Image (tube, rainbow, N blue to C red; front, side, top):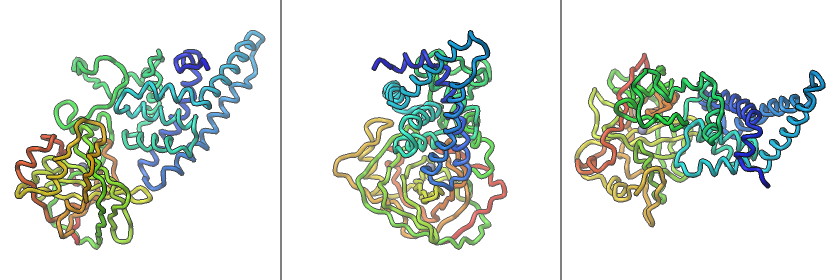
Length: 416
Ligand SMILES: [Zn+2]
């Protein structure tokens, strides 16, 4: 076959763009809804998305059938019908997907825009039951604040522009939030004008006070984390029980923290609801304060229930004795950023990081990193554990803690 992505793109650019725009629009709405409700399983959502995709296909067919207004337009219609067939073929035999994957392969992480573009092309090619399609949408969901529809429309355009094609980008997309609008303060590293990953960090122009520019919820949310934990407390009746299992150590430096990914099987039960432990990671200093004071560090254990609810257990790490768990982790830090590292023959039990007692402070909050999604239950354990000064010093991030956020009338409860 002679279909290369570039050739297909050039010829059918407008059509591809229209299709992707349609798909991305639907994806945006769906993802925004998922982000908001976090109540349904992703597979269902992707299936629904595909049902709606039928509308896009219908629109395509209508275009094909469209009556020419006069004789002259007839030839044009014919050509576009042929183009459409070729385009459908390119999607269905996976050529577009393959080419796009090749183009992006060299990059260790895609921007949320490209990610959703990829997911859309995958959906068109492989259908909604394909694991890769679901994973691609899942990833896009985790990466960005999709409640901003414009951003997603621009996503389709940027996905194409990123493939090296000259695309007329909507003027609204040019005012991309990735580029600060305040004139003259251009970051020299971002002058290329290409689509790129949305940067965020803990200091300077990328610091927490600017996250809201790219991730609206970080700026406008009313239930944000972390908090300063200070009484009076309500009494919580929640009962926590933890059943973490030993498994092979999988450790990642994602550029913002050190994260340990956990194999399925470790669970947290809150009352009668089961949450799977997905990963745990660290912040220095602790993000939460107790009576206005930070600990040296904190470990966040991130759990998810079957219907997508998130619960985080926070273990405060105070300066003191050596921590045996930390010793194992720091001895196996990943050699490079962005790739999960599996040291040979090292296993780890996350429960070695927990104190004996599970007394807690509980509040409803958010992810403490962009996109700052809300609806996360936090259980900060009352009892801290030790970490030595030397061990704190060996954590590769000097500062990776979001400052405490406004309570906005929320109640903190205590229990356990
Ligand atoms: Zn965290």
